[in-house]
Length: 117
Image (tube, rainbow, N blue to C red; front, side, top):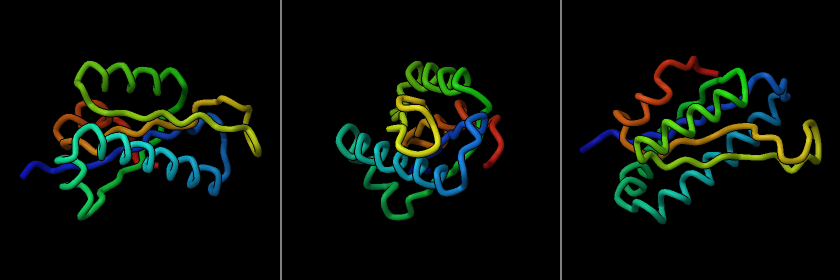
């Protein structure tokens, strides 16, 4: 069995409150899981039993874009979250990106250098 996990990278430059970060990470996790449930049921099924999630911090939208490009190049499923703008930040602001659930070996190539939130 291959280790399957999900990583969510969240922007800290937006200075979101703790509750806002939690909500954005939850959105990213659910979007990513649903994406993989449809596109790669085997990965989803293996991940579902433990639902390993890691949350890392990034400093900017530029880093989110770099993560996305690398995910695309490695064929790792990703889901980006843009805020509706009802509370703390402007509508359409990208707050975070989820990778996977996918094999750890692939995800680590993308987010292994980032620190935990």
